[in-house]
Image (cartoon, rainbow, N blue to C red; front, side):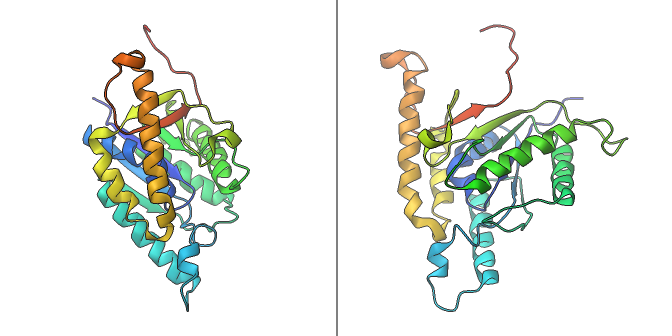
Length: 244
């Protein structure tokens, strides 16, 4: 039986998957993958300043607005499934039960690859914490002794998507993905995130800059494929190949 093509994106806050992996999500959906997105929090406390500046705002209203934005963005990207754990942010913290819940999702999705944040982020510890949890949950999902009788996880690659200030994060991309064909979907998803409008053009510029890196690394400075938008990722685990 052919293994289904699936992927899993683990996002600290409700908007992170859009800025950092929206192109990869839309492209792989187009390639026949079923991409699941898990948002551990809505980013309601620390990443919703525009909403909090409105009169009469409450925590629940902010959560509702952020969820609606994320769901609209997911539709724009053709996301197969989006799940909200609603664990709070600034700081984000998972209990043992929360981690087991994430393990259950990983095993159920059985992804060919996973995505999450950089392993270091001095500006937003929720991001690095999320990836630490993702790596722990991946490890547990591989353990035969965790809920014996369930199908265990194989060894999917974990790709770290681009942080906001790469020079501060120790993030070194070793993969560039051409997202030109799905850029309009990503830009539509970006514009769903009304609470962080100041980032719309920033992440458009990031995609254009990464396309330059794609071109320079896909056939030389003059002969590279004419990508106009791209995303960069850093792989955590070795990639196994039969030839280079």
